[in-house]
Image 1: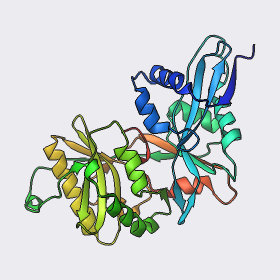
Image 2 (image 1 turned 90 degrees about the horizontal axis):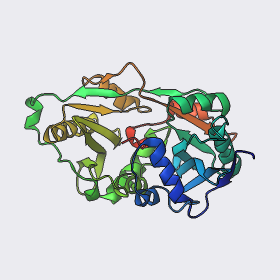
Image 3 (image 1 turned 90 degrees about the vertical axis):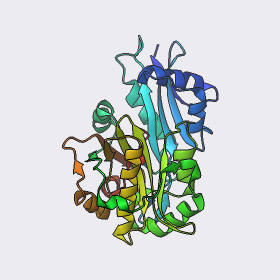
Image 4 (image 1 turned 120 degrees about the vertical axis):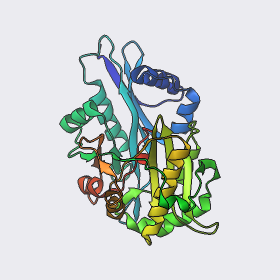
Length: 322
């Protein structure tokens, strides 16, 4: 007995994959949510699984398609998500996870296939990845936090209201990305397709959308989500032309936090020096300990993964933690 074998996803595997995910992460995700996130496999995602000698699915390495731009050029990229390995008799001492990841790399990653992967591994996965999977240097991501201030003089200004993400104008979001994309050396492509997939095509119903501009053109947009007494500023795109746009967005986020009875704000911000400087000068503070780390791997000679992740524009919206 070999213990386990790796193979590519086959139709019907999703039942066992989702069951294993729920066991590994102590949750109760529905199969409908799995379909929203991964289906159709081969277009929206790629998956390699491990099957043990008892015909049980004991591990998966799944990557979702994430169009990325580097220096204005779109590349074929992906992000590992929901990866896990289940401990079972007969394989508990074998390197099931590492072998499953390497099988994925061998199958789907090459200069003419997936050329770049990036992700946010947990502590154990990061250790394994750096030791056995070629992850390289990890970039620490700190959380920016700010207490929701008491109402003051600025509240005489009328904030833009927070609305359901389903009310967002996707044409305006697309047009803004066309104007703003040049600001980011490397970034997920935050166009209408990305917005719709990330914030609309989900079972999550408590995302809120804010924008600055008119019915014909916006200069910036944000997505926020309340969790307990914290309002998470999950995503942000703005054109960088006038700092007043960022001031108005922050003012609207603060107003939304009060309406939602949140006491503090939190966000990630990498790869946008202009926005980071704004946060520093508006009473936002970075936590000392990194919340998570960013890693990347490249299979193309012209793509330096370490340089890309050092320059990459990152918000909480790039992960699927919220």
